[in-house]
Length: 311
Image (cartoon, rainbow, N blue to C red; front, side, top):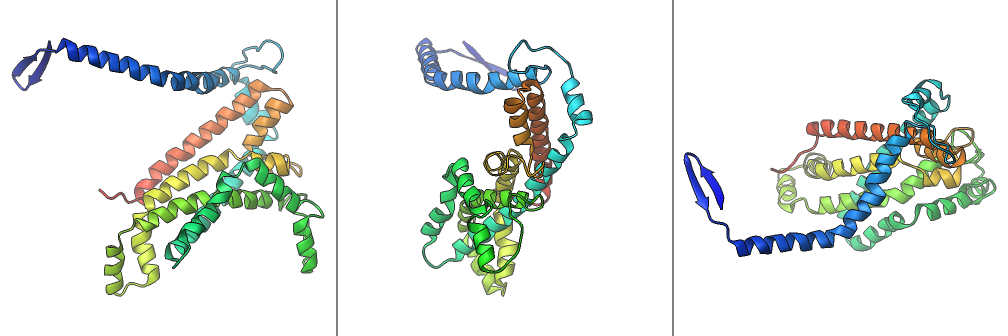
């Protein structure tokens, strides 16, 4: 029996035992089909996350028994590690420059594709191709282009432009990493923004054109506000991925020259798998996680001022 209260009235509805058994059997069947995914998520996501939290409070060095050290790793990271603040500065520099350039370039390309008279589908495919190319493979190709005496240096010499090598100069190495990241990552946002632009109702644009609005006015005052939720999604995802940059740096610069391109992602690898300081590497990982959460929360707070949802 099931009791339903509607105001002052209490209605007792008899439960059909047959329907109850069917619902229980369907629940067991659903659990059976979900079980492989659930087990995989627990084994490869939940347990590693919990393990890294515990490891960040130990001095585990891959071999031997870990010892609990409390907040010593966090204290060392924030007050005694001379490499942490330069690495953090490099990470923020990469994130800000890459995020701005990615959004501007992908939005420009999306707008151009949207206004193209022919070949829109082909342009989407061409720009999206680098996105699903493995990052390691992309980085190796660009390493061959930028290496001393490589294709890029040859082109500079051919046009009589004197400039230091992109990978060995401390001021240019990060720019090389950003160029490679843009080449590999712009396509995703381009396709995303292009799809959003194509969904803007043509009646709005036609009405504005009749009222005398210029092409810039129609873009700035109609199309851009209407695609702002998609822009916000692209900005959040791009910021999260840029804070975790690793492949390009590992292949092209190994954090050098000096520490010019060392980021938090590379520092985690360096401390964990080169110096075997797994506890300390876990601490850096959780500091990076805190940064990502703080930046994402800030973006969600900021979106109330510029994102327009069609309610």
